[in-house]
Length: 336
Image (cartoon, rainbow, N blue to C red; front, side, top):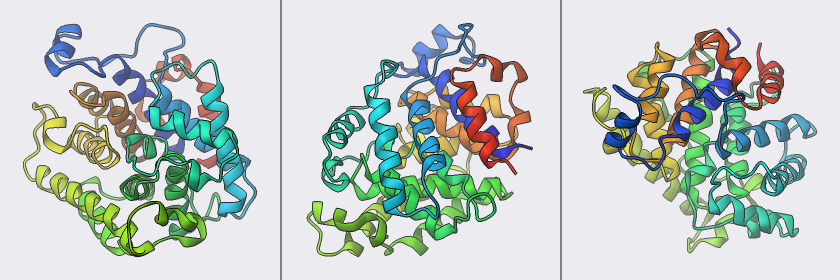
């Protein structure tokens, strides 16, 4: 089924589809792409993606480059190098987020990562790139669920130091891991709520070190609890929305516009759960949205690809998408 490849290419396809609709209202999108929004990738060769896919590649390639077993010590330099290389690349011209740019500038100066991060930011850049972490398993990488959680939060923390950014990245990786393992999509909101409650007071001190001190909190536990509580609130919104699924309304009006990490997660999941067996309709629904359309569609594509695998996508898209060689290499590394 090539679930890892389906996830990574799906993220790129969603990113590319949503790139032309970001910053537009739903009415403007429908006027540009009648009657129901874009369903085909652009005719460009290659089809361009945004910084979302570029950063996903950076995380994935850092994971392949890092020595095993993964620890904060073995993974910090590969992530730092990959993020700085992305920031300084001439291809970094796709309207990248200012939080990522600023944090990467600080990382390039050699600051300790916990001082380089933007401590008040929980932008979606913390979790739109985390899909490769969700593909790590004990079989393909020797990574436990607890280690996967720590890695997801750590890669987020290098740029986005807000606890909600960490928790949302962890949840995104967990959702992908659940889908790769064969979870029923209809049970996913409840499973993620259960997971969030189980992790609520866990601070991965070996990975996150003194990050909690950047916030005005009394303890590491109270720091991370604040992030999980915000994520639990939007997961409850998602759970309620799925009791009455609405394929017609703007998803951003239901689960959030996606500019912040927890809303990017829930709105990406919502679009996936509306069309769990129809990948193109899922990313189309995400692209026809009034918020951060490329990031929402990127996450939606990752979820549906992790569930259905590579063969679910139109065959000709693989040859046309930008960075297909790098995506293929990563997918092959983690496909079972």
